[in-house]
Image (cartoon, rainbow, N blue to C red):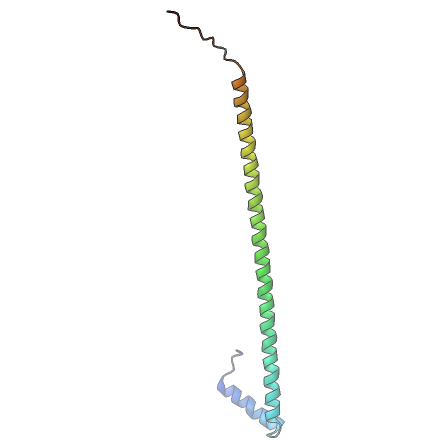
Length: 108
């Protein structure tokens, strides 16, 4: 994770053995392992929280885009309805007016 190879880890262990001493080294190693585990869980929890927030943002953006599309579709339907109503009124008015051409009966 940090780019520590075996030789560097061995040097760290030897220095820790000299500084801490052989009596307390197991307790220090246990405490270090415990703290390292807690740090990893903390980082994992933060990653989960960040990914959850990103998912919530994505869902919110998707919801907004759906609302915009629904609004556009509603406007298109209203415009189509208005056009159909105008056409129906024109057709109705043309049907109620008598034709100007006079139809004469055919005589025998």
